[in-house]
Image (cartoon, rainbow, N blue to C red):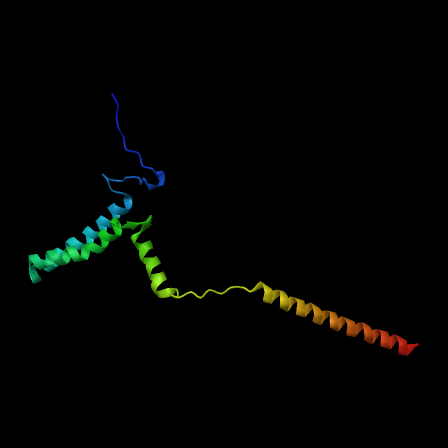
Length: 135
């Protein structure tokens, strides 16, 4: 009798489960959603009505559910949002390509070497002239 078991192709994709089918991160986020949403509902249901309070409670809890469940390309929600903010607002949109012209650098270096040689020749000539005047 054969038993078929699904095995993940990438072992890194397998996440350890904490409670039921949820990871620790998801359990913490759901707990935070409950800690904010339920008191919000209980405090507002008399003032604005149960239907509106329930809708607002869902709206208050949605960011926590989003943070708990969203994952794109192995990045969590806050990592992904950080990357988007960096890409859109912090870094410039147009990156200018600046090539290093090696030929120009070689020309400058050659010019500097010629200048140094000329200065050294002048210095040698002066020494020779001084040496010949002393004799």
